[in-house]
Amino acid sequence: MAFLFNRSRARSAQDLVKSSKDLLQRLGREEGQAAAAKTQTELSSTIATLKVSLCGTPDTPTPDASSQSSLISAILSEKLLPLLVSNLHLLPFETRKDTQTLIAAVFRYRAPGSTANEPDALREVIRTAPEVIVQLCRGYERKESASACGGVLKEALKWDAVAAVILYDESVSGDSGNGPTKTVDIYNDIDTSSPSSGTGVFWSFFTYISSSPFEISADAFDTFRTILTKHKPLVAQYMGTNFERFFERYNNVLVRSESYVTKRQSLKLLGEVLLDRAFYEVMTRYVGSGENLKLVMWQLKDDRRMVQYEGFHVFKIFAANPNKTPEVQKFLIMNKQRLLKFLPRFLEERTDDDQFNDEKAWLIKAIGALPDDVGAAGAGSRQGVEKNPSTAQVRS
Image 1 (cartoon, rainbow, N blue to C red):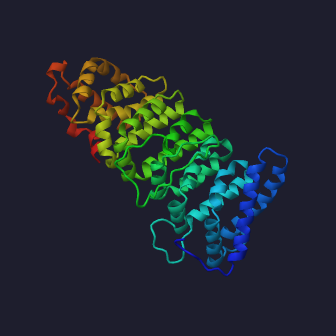
Image 2 (cartoon, rainbow, N blue to C red):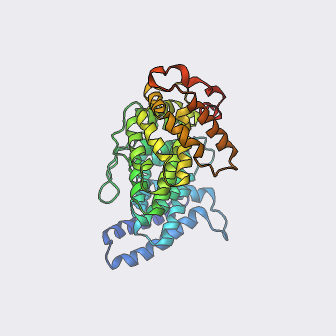
Image 3 (cartoon, helix red, strand yellow):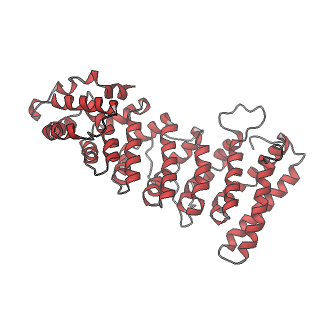
């Protein structure tokens, strides 16, 4: 183990953890049986004790460093975390909350004097049991575990290594929601140039978002957004390697979703990503596609105003691009007259949104400056672009 702790209380900590482990294994075997209720009660008490032993309570002081380190060491050496996560859905509601607090506290733990990038316990989990991170993601497959797992994930996703485990996982979800996991050494054994198979847990987020009840979908989208926006260099490289697969799913599953919330959030997130400097290469590839442009223009005609609004902020990136591909240039020219009739009336009730109205006015001017026929297309797409506020955002 990368770090060992003071063992003055190791036996009592070891006994507490072993008791929890035995009860969790028993609960898994008793699922659906009357005996499970008694096991749940015992386990609830044991997990509550573990939580207090590690975190303290508002009425008791935080345990000393020696006690905390002994307990953390026991939890890791006994491999309690995988059992806690995989059986989370079988626990009572309050015990799930205690378990969430317990796992999050383990992930935050740093040994005194540690200078490692990630917290020591989390680094140990990533190095020896990355399946714990994968199981937390798979928690979205059950309503009972989704919230608790999501809470732990969003806190753990402060660290690049956690995002890397999720992105580069190649496991396949089993019937139980905890399929076999191919252990990958995130620190030493990642080939960022190798395309994903599309079966790992990261790709399951498209299903969690599109096919789950609202509360699970919303929580899963929040985690998905955290992955994409908090680890920009890592994600930009991953998107570049898996560009076609990623945007095929993003466009077809999220942007084309029949859910108003999913569609709106997905368009907003897409705009944020494409306008971020870290994703410049991704942006140039995305806005170079005529099919992507067609998809975004359809959102301008959606019946819902906020979908139209978010679609506009993606559409303007296509128009602001000074190096439009022939495919995009041709499509814009072919629709020039329609756009010039449509845009002046577009969201005209937003009279107090000065930025939006300035951008819309520029967009009308820029489209009006396009050639009237495809054969005349040339450098016209550059006219006026440098003064456009949208262009400044693209390049910021």
